[in-house]
Image (cartoon, rainbow, N blue to C red; front, side, top):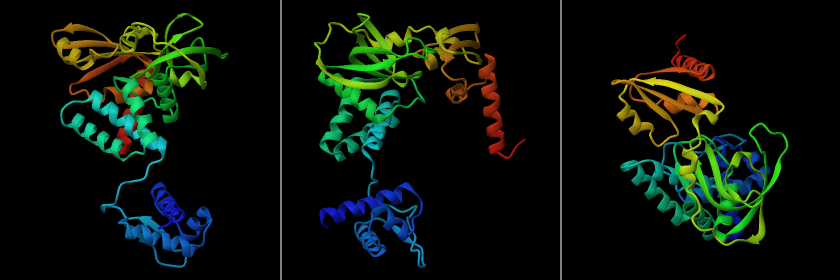
Length: 320
């Protein structure tokens, strides 16, 4: 196939992966070609091993066949980076067969990526620390742009609120050193040039992030951002979490000791866990893997989040 024909066929494949079914006229309109050309492109993809079903009729609907082996899926650059980040987190935060599978998949992904995209992902591998589970997401493009600035030792500029509730933003100039994916969200560890001190910045609160043209020399002995995050007091969160767990303190410490929590023994069989959450609705999912009974004592918003989660689960089972 010529380059143009190949690119168009790959666009057809990308459209079929993005939506369960397309008619030939819809594909033709999106690609700017005739329906006859669409049929030829589909035939070429079938020859390459892609299982594509066709609905009979004038509309000529197409869909990728389910349940059959197909060649590797197509990813956009940001999707490939997102998959790579997820695999890195799985490899860092799990152990045994799960970690080995994540590493194996990451090696295969790395080998399949084009050079520039492979470098973006390797930057993230080199300059991201993972600690705890997080449901927070940030654009892959922002992650790789910051990681590239860390590697090149180039200053960043961005807007940032001085406090969580502040409406006005301040302009910050920093020397970036490390990205951290923590249970509370994504952070940048950087030296704040205007405050002449080290700071942790939440990526979801940063805006208008720009890479400057000014380089910097690495400062000696930068602080460990993971340890700094662990020292943030639990009462700094907007929602308090108080849970009594039917397990001894030693066991609960093994489960939660690496998170920012305060653990204390109620008796030899029961432990009190006190921590905080950025959003109350995150807590039910966070505690759902506990293998022992537990009771949510507070706060009211967290208890309400558990009640809502319970109602959704009962509804999913057809229970009232």
